[in-house]
Every structure is written in structure tokens, then in C-alpha cells.
Image (cartoon, rainbow, N blue to C red; front, side, top):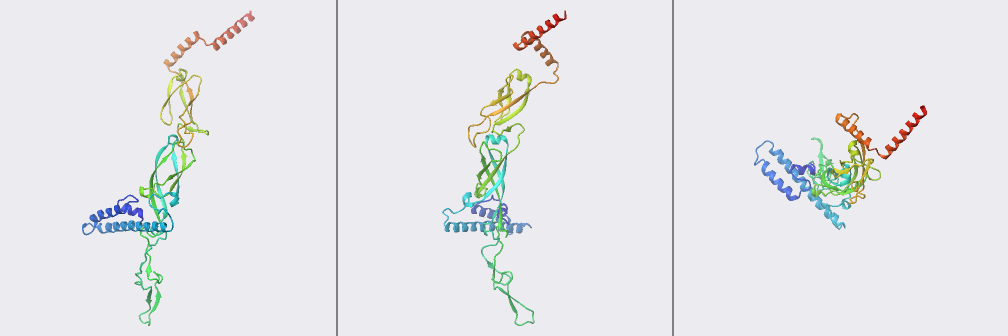
Length: 346
């Protein structure tokens, strides 16, 4: 049974204290002990409960012993829950996918995963450090063999214990594997202004809080967005169609932005607009933000309906009586050419 399975068996979160483990064991034992529970599965469940509590207890004892050894060896700060990466040295790489909104504004992200590490209870050997008496040779270190008629009997070294009389059982914390798989869950604050491919480090959170003792090495992947695009210069860009008549009328429109919809006034003859301070932060975690460039594409209906057609005809009539200078000059040139052509034909 692994240490994680032991915590689950007792209904505890990873890294629970010894007092919490003992209280959980007592509560479950009072419910499932065969002397109090006559159900068929009570005995099997009680065995699992005892194994889980023993696994947690032995792991805790071993961790305290290892901390004491490290401190005696000259380490001024004995390792324990919440140890930083400098002491533990464990670095866990992983990718984090962000939307453009998260990259622009920053976010909190809960990360979950697994860390495989050497078993602290047995030091990675898979064997319990306290030897026990060999049951094959009853601790003598040798066994007598021979036929019933042979005399004297032949004494050979006991194979299970290699003649030592003692055996080291499998470590109960890692079931003899020498390593443990630790599940972690930690909350990481990702600052605003992160770019695609950037790498940042974050604290693992500490095993006493459900994380792990070490550092997360995060690689940022900013995923493609249906509306926004980040340019090579870090400027945020967006292109979308607008009503051509609204563009001619210079109306106000709603423009999508990472922080929400923003209002922008259209201008006849202008297709590109720059919204100051609505782009990516210029520096990671900085308050000053770059620009947001919006490109509009005026769009007109291919076949106007009857009402639109009537309004267009009325607009043409009004325009005919109030010609702009360029159109008036062109009409004067056209009339002069027509009069000259008629005079030449006479």
C-alpha cells in the first residue's frame, strides 16, 4: 500500500498530521472492528485500516529520522513540509495553456499532477531499515538438511536470509517499490503579460498543503483565439466587418476587447483604429499596457431591400442638389466636353 493510498483509506488529505491520522484510525476502528461489527467484510476492512495507519506512522517516523540526520550533518535548516526547491532540488516541468484574455489580464490557475520520487521511508531501497528474525531458520542463519538415514545431518546456510538469521521486509510505505507517486494540487498565480513560449517558475506549494516540496517549471502556451491575435510587436490586433451604412454615418459601435466590450466611434474614410492601453502589458506583471489595433471592413448588402432602395434613391436625389466640389468639377468638365462635341458635329 502506497502512502497516498493509505491517506485515501483513512479518508485524509495527503500530508495530514499524525494526530489527524490517529483520530481517523480510531474512528474507523470503532466502526469496523470485528468485536463491534459482525458483517462479513469487517475483518478485511479492519486489516486495511491497520495497514494504512501503520504505513503513515512508519513514513512519519522515517521522515523525522531523516530530518535529524540532515541537521546533524551540518544542514542549518532541517527539511520538512514547505521546503523550497533549493533544499529539495525537485523541479517538475509542465505546460500551461492560456487564452489571450488570461495572457493580457493574468489569472489564477489550479494545477494538478503527480510526482514520482524516492521513498523517504526506506531511502529508495524498497526494504524496511529494521531487520526482523528470519522465520525460515528461526534466526539461526542455517538449516539442517539430509535424509532420515543420513548421519550426521548436513548444515547449510539459510537462503532466504543469506545465513544472517535476519531479513529486511519490504517497506510498507512503498510496498517494496523504492519510490512513491505523490499527487499534488496547487494554485499558481500567473502574472499579466505572459507570451507564448515563455517559461516561469512557481512554488510547488508544499506537501503539507496538498502540493509538493519543490518548484514547477511552467512553459506558457497561448492558444489561438477566435477574435484576437498577438502581433510580433506585442500589439493586440482584431479585424472584423461592420455595417457600411453605420460606417458612413460615423456611428458608435461595440468593439470586443480582452477586458470586455468597448465603445468606439467609426469615422468615414478610416479603416484602422488604435485603442490606447487595451493591449498586452509592456512588461510581465506591469501596469502599463500596449495598444489594441482594430481594423474594420465596411460591408454593404448585395441586394438592398425595398426600404433600403427607396432611401438610397432619396439620398441620390439630395446629393444631386448638393454636389461636393470634386463631383461638381467633374460635371463641369463633362458638360464642356459635350458642348464641344456637339459644336464640332454641326
